[in-house]
Image (cartoon, rainbow, N blue to C red; front, side, top):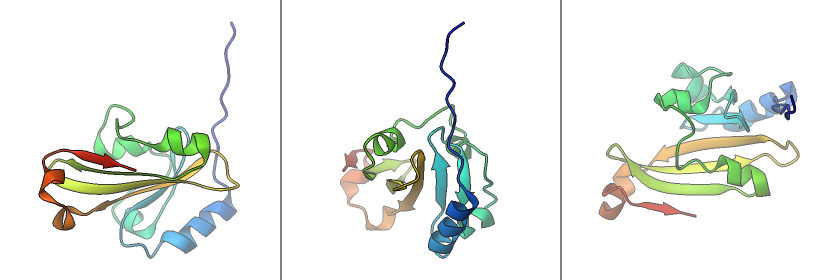
Length: 130
């Protein structure tokens, strides 16, 4: 039987310490993930909400798999950050995927609820990506 075994990147203790130093005071949930969408670390806001490492990010929203708007693969492929702004369940989210330079296979992801600042056309379930 032939097949490819894919080793999933795990964040080092140093990377997790750096992540916490940088993101613990951020006022929104921020996740450090590997390419399989497994949470490696979560900032203070996320920990306070009960989010724990080793969970798949899409499980936080009871999704059956990777979200259709997820930009992680594209960000990891070329090492460039991605952004997506769109409406979901009456909220407008400004979402980011930031690959870690020098730590291939890891990225930071967060989404900010910008509903009160959004234009009406975004609330009509239209998306803008950049």
